Length: 310
Length: 310
Image (cartoon, rainbow over all chains, first blue to last red; front, side, top):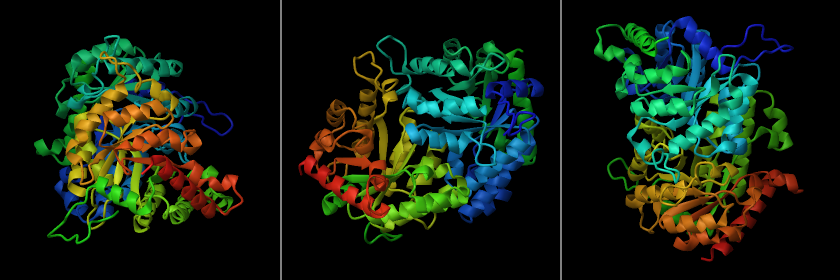
């Protein structure tokens, strides 16, 4: 987790998450986020064989795999997005691996977006904010930003927004996801004629209003599936200052051109996530798995940068 | 985690979660679920002093506290509901404590409802189902049931429903929560004049249709806040076979009489959760913390049983 320069106990200048994103995007000329979805059955054979020997061995293999991917993609990506479910499936050993991978990613100069889709009320939401976004004793926060499910409403998101203000954290709210089931609730039509997800987008705009950093973008972002291009334009207009986190590129089918309209609020106003198409690129390549991932990350980052048009 | 009698590799009879709940309710004459929300700052002083010495010490104190509560409430409650956030806030050590507390609760004859409010898509949802509801190698599942956030729709809940069918697990979907922010999205009015949460309730009814056990209730349940009594009656009618999990009793303000209307589908058709009012009962008592929790659990269980009217 990046800390501001000159960080001391006496004089802490908190740099907004959105400003840290903007700085990284400009420096690396990339808006690529690499999703770390470590599925045992997809690991390179040299790691998979070891991983099947139980959860501790699985967690060790996952940690080695993720660190290898981090090394390979660090020059081309601005952030990694560990998918917490795959670590949790390995129990306490998996959580230890998650902590190690997050720390390693920060040290490699990558922002860390924990994809955990948390959401709860009152003191429970505060505990999730503490788990992911707040300093833990002398240690830095586990992640720079967290994905959050907004279904429980304003009081459920307040602790995450407080972590943004106090610790320079970021939040990405689920607004309109990329899966088929998004139709069931997110696309239900409200009495005013707009879908539920548009109403959620308006809430996200309100929640993020006082989190706008020096670059004019907010640390309260939104997850918007890139599989429905029309949605991206609507989401951009509804949340002009939010950083849009766009999954659905690569394996899920959308092209970088589909997402270009997300970038009209600036070069760091959207981030594009690719997971399996990068980290398992070796499956369609003759390259070593690290080399294949690095090559695919470099290719995608350049393609997105060109499509974004900045 | 309870296993069916005569469970062997060759011949496994899976007992539905809803049937296991019904059996426990009738045997214990109780519909009480005790929420395990281990907040360090509220622990009894003998544990709190130790807990502030770091995360490992905090996790050890939390584990000791939860085990003491489990011992105290096991005769009066049918289930415990560990609030996963408070364990996650202690990192990998907290996850190890969660695993230990879940195992201990099962051995004490309590069902375990992991309150994690998970929800994601595709292989990620499958990983969450594996983390909480599926056997882990030779070990039983971490929990008997899981709370799930439905905002991502049908394909996001399928892996959890599959775990219900295959492993006798249960799911409680967030439908209408007890917090003030439930107004923001759950109470938004759809074009057909009903609130979003009623639409979600209809989805939950569909999802649970093929999970109805021998007692006529489904293993796909619903979380319905007990702070709005009118909502409980509506939810009962919309989901006649779902087990309603009702938080909001005790500290959050609703009375057992408020929840009586939830029980019209049978004595095990609703479960009432109380967390802080039970586990921190010692703060308003002269009793030892275990004795205070046991006493409050016994009192609440009897009051709910009487109000339910079975």
